[in-house]
Image 1 (cartoon, rainbow, N blue to C red):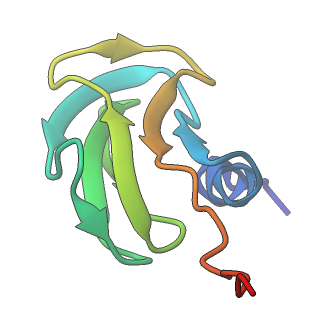
Image 2 (image 1 turned 180 degrees about the vertical axis):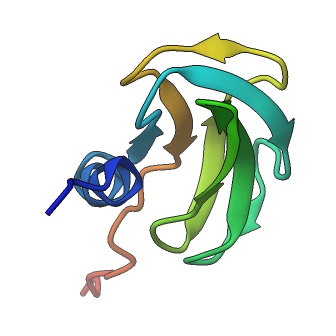
Length: 95
């Protein structure tokens, strides 16, 4: 089986809090902005690579901390999206 670079990018994003380019390309269209709340599967940007357009989707629910700039040339592994780190909402009672 041929490894899927987009699936590999999703797996990495789940563990690192950032989404990296699965291949070199051009950020053709950015659909969200810094501070936006996104849901798993929501299209974030379009990466043009190998004469094809690849939709990069959110691997999980979250808030965008940083996102690549439209028109940016990226290399394999470049951070495209960084998510705000989630903190546990658990609170402790003060007595």
